[in-house]
Image 1 (cartoon, rainbow, N blue to C red):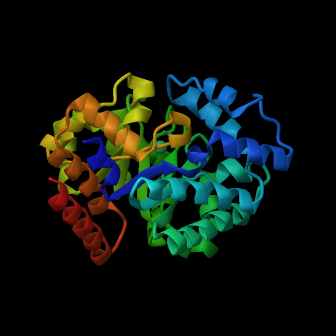
Image 2: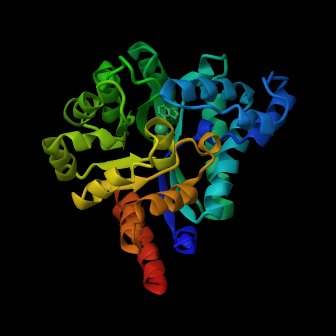
Amino acid sequence: MQHFIEKMPKAELHVHLEGTLEPELSFQLAKKNGAELAYKTPEALVAAYDFHDLPSFLNIYYAGMNVLVEEDDFYQLTFAYLTKARSQETLYAELFFDPQAHTSRGISFDTVITGIHQAQVNAEKKMGIKSQLIMCFLREMSAESAMQHLVLAKPYRNWLVGVGLDSDERNNPPVKFAEVFSEAKAMGLKLTMHCDVNQQNSLMHIKQCVSDIQVDRIDHGINSLECEVLCELIKHKKLGLTVCPVSNQFVVQSLTSDEIHKMLKKDMLVTINSDDPAYFRAYLNENLIELQKEGKFNQNQIVTLVGNAFKVAWLDNATQNDYLQQLHRYVSQHI
Ligand code: HPA
Ligand code: ZN
């Protein structure tokens, strides 16, 4: 099963580029940029990772970003992730980035997005891994700040496939950003929002995403299972759910395999993703392998989870079908 998962053609739809910053690269960039790190070695940094809920993770995640300064830093970050993903047979990835976490430190929007974009172009050329970019707004920041960043993104419209919403969910509901998401939709961008597992008002936030914001996808969304009518609506609208098992484990002490089984039974379009793989020490393969062990998923169920990611990816039908055919060819040779 492990080998079957490792070699399977895959897609990743929920990964924060800043969450792919490996300690070794972090130390290298800190040295180059003269940035202070609180720990002496990469090993000591990892040993200090202590997450038990979303805010405790976010504190460490934002502190880590201080080493990202120049365009080439963003290039290296992105290229390293895409190299790692390709080594795990991830053929396609949709990448989140958090521009406000950088502009708030005095780094220009252009520096961030140009470094990322160049790495995407080169990774596709050199390794054949395709990727698209999703700009996330930080939900504890104001709607005005989000709108300012959407305006900043307008000259780079063609480098983006969609917008998302992440960071601290407490007291920051989806409707706070109704106007900016409506404007993004008018720009032809796809919409997604985080509804992390077991947050305050999770269910209400998912309902707002579906009915008020009219998202194209939901990030996490595990708590939708608390409402049968909502599950039916998500299924009817064919909304993908980007679940991140190892990330969830830090909050709910389980890889949420029971919940993923329930979603599969309901024919909901659930997908498996890594979220912040450098911090959670698990890329896509490790997420799938650990999940399979916990939930005893059979090969067909694993194939459904991986196939769902290609089905709900923001790609044209021809490209999507091409990936699905590659997956099915692989499966017919290995089952
Ligand atoms: N949840 C919310 N915001 C985030 C996350 C997450 O898992 N990772 C990076 N920003
Ligand atoms: Zn996330």
